Length: 399
Ligand SMILES: Nc1ncnc2c1ncn2[C@@H]1O[C@H](COP(=O)(O)OP(=O)(O)O)[C@@H](O)[C@H]1O
Ligand SMILES: [Mg+2]
Image 1 (cartoon, rainbow, N blue to C red):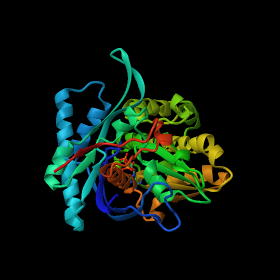
Image 2: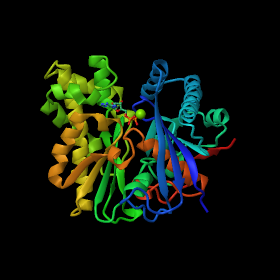
Image 3: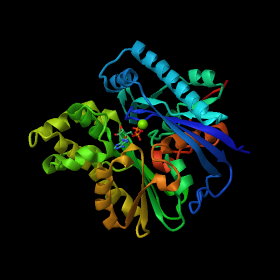
Image 4: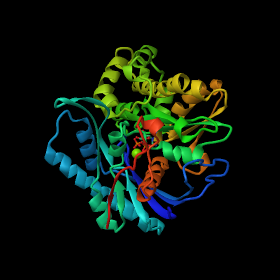
């Protein structure tokens, strides 16, 4: 029988901006947030106790981005990064514990994805998919004295899934609703959504990556404005989206692929941003216009995904479109989404209004997944990842 536990979820996403730590109380009951029952999962009452964010230091961020974008790197470099990140997670978790006075029983650490290839491709004579998350769990467990669940993605992939997205279980537990469809859109480095029809069973959940989130916007801001990101979407608001560049970019193969599908820096990383900027500069030299175009690309690729793949499955129920991730703080992006989706019977809000700060949601998800694994319960949603079966996710490092 699952026990109530306090679980720390540690997340650092493709933006490589820093580490989010969520401290979550999870109990095996029904009824979650008022009005949003989690049916058919065995879970649970889930209460976010605290959230802390820790930006990466500049050298560590540089090392992560270098490893992610490198056409080639060395085994030594990767080994060092794995251990250095383990240290960063351990220190972040300890700081969260010290500043909140809350000591978790268990930790779920997603780690930093340095490479993800969700679909099989030919390698050394065989077709394989692969994924690699960094951050040595032995260091986290040893420094904090708390057991760690890590390496969540491979078990889903070994079951034939894409290993992503893994947040849908949390989305289902927190947001499934008897009369309203729910679309949970996370906008991190990459954009991804979970769609839950009204009164759906877990097997009706659809989830996939929509394409770039903040990744291209961030790259252009760093290159053109020497800022890490477009705070509030103000730079984009001062520019004008360049329609020919936007139209051409939306023709990208990834956007036309049917779900399930996943994306990363492999598709929308430094090389992509470089070409995108070159295309913008053929029409306008204004940085604001390039950032506005990247922002429009993120918004339109999300809206188009919803219109094409989601609305046909959830209509005629009205939908709540609930945004999380750092991109939820980009007002220009949200205004664009509102304009594109409100005519389709979607109400736009953020997870802030459901008691989960937009920055905390993915960290909460990995707390829940650790809780599942600790109790020998599956954490993937097969309809979301494409896996043939539910899978026990991750590896446990005991203390
Ligand atoms: N106030 C803000 N205004 C606009 N964008 C923001 C703001 N805060 C964060 N962001 C964006 O969110 C990104 C981080 O989002 P996050 O959800 O942590 O993504 P990831 O999971 O990829 O790390 C930043 O790189 C930035 O682009
Ligand atoms: Mg982040």
